[in-house]
Structures are given as C-alpha cells and as structure tokens.
Image (cartoon, rainbow, N blue to C red; front, side):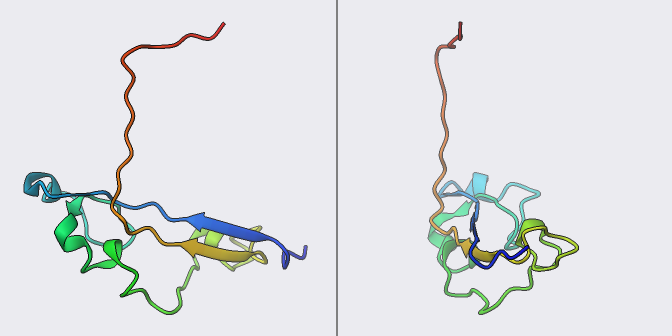
Length: 103
C-alpha cells in the first residue's frame, strides 16, 4: 500500500519538572532521553527534556514500533512520520471529590 499521502504525528510525552530537590532526585529515575522523570525545572533547559537545542539532526527509528520505517516492523512504514518534541515540563493531574454514575 502506498502511504505517501498519509501522516503519523507522534506527540512525544515527557517528564515533568519541579523545584523540590527531594522529588527530582528520587532513586531509580534516569536522565536518558527516552525516560520521563521529574527533574529540576532550573536544570531542565540544559538537557534533552528541556530544549531541542541538543537534538540530533536525524534519528534511527528502527526498533521503535510504529515510528519505524521497517516494513517488517511497522505496517505504517510508508507513511510520513513526524515527532513533535515535548520539552516544557508541564504536569497535568486531575482529581474528583465525587463519583458519577451513568444510568
């Protein structure tokens, strides 16, 4: 199948940031680019999660599932693929004080 007119837009997830040192230094978190984790907002601008400044000009997406260009790995391999970078450090949470029921 020709996917030349189709697009896959991947909205990258990310890790949130904080200025609470105890949260940013929790054991087990990693500063690797593919791991989301809390880090200090003031430090974030100097690494991958906080800026696109250090992005590589190209990426090898082999082994990355639906982002891969390998036809044996991804049925959407012929589609145009775009990665929209995440680097603002926001965290969205929700809580409800009451439950709802559907009828």
